[in-house]
Image 1 (cartoon, helix red, strand yellow):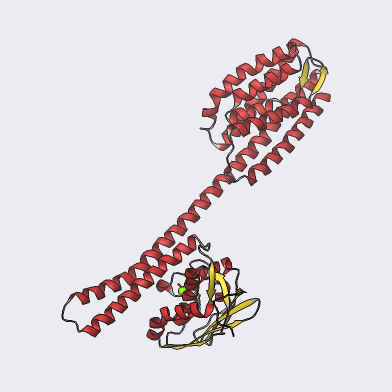
Image 2: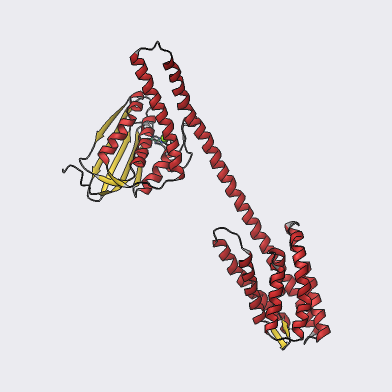
Length: 420
Ligand code: ADP
Ligand code: MG
């Protein structure tokens, strides 16, 4: 059973190589194979098959070179090239009867594979496996029959047994594997697509809602302003409201932009006291509206490195959540401490607090307990900004008592600071 043994050994080698190829393919970013890569793969397989073939006489080589040809021809559409590669590589071993037989078999095969390829891919997955196996079986039978005509192989039974079993078995395994990988790949792509679509949908809904509300409100006040009978102080008040509404619409857009591109743009040294004071002044009207008293304890110095606009955005989001957590009013504490290595910022409220489960989900995109009023993006943006600034966040919260956020950023020395 020398021939069977050798063919099985060939098959084992092909499997090993294809397994390595599969790993390479898995790690590839675009998950496609170019014709050149396919051809190279098939030539490597051919080379291995021919190197480890069984050669009872110098002009006869028993091996599985049929497998790369079939796979290349039916699955990769490069049948003619692989067939020609077979003939060339066989010619390298000598111009003899074997080469003649090889050419006689592989030249028509090249043509058949070339014509078969488009039709093959119109069949369904199961049919493709059957077709590949059947074609291989037929070709193997032709191969042994042809061998018998030229010179009878060493053992007739062995040759027939090996050729009717091993190539077809190999192709069955390989084409099944191919179909399996292909199905998985398609599945993965559709999953990815639907996930993306879902994100876009949610985003669209949230954006239109979140931006439309302040715009509608602003429009209403503009309408009021257009009547000339308003007293001067009313006009001023309305203009302030309009400004606030537009600013809130702008913040939503900013959150979405940061959501899609969290990298810091301009890095500069930020004096946290000054920056936090600015943030508080932006939120002052909202705090007043909710009867929230803002209490601050700032350390005299303390600077960090970061993007000013993103830093503002981050703390606006945190403080806005704190204010929104105190619908009946309350106190918002903003404290900073400073040491050589870190700057610590604590934002504490006396609001509704969070359960353990809520804390765990904090920062998840679109996680909000505020129903139609929330976007569930605020904390996500906070986490991504803090991460980009090499900071950390700790959350402590008790339902009904309040929430405390502790931020820590690496501190830097600033020359502009007052010396303590
Ligand atoms: P949104 O404010 O749009 O709901 P966020 O990402 O800003 O989205 O916040 C997510 C959720 O985290 C909020 O819906 C709220 O349940 C919870 N949360 C955040 N900060 C606080 C806080 N200070 N107190 C209580 N709950 C909070
Ligand atoms: Mg929020």
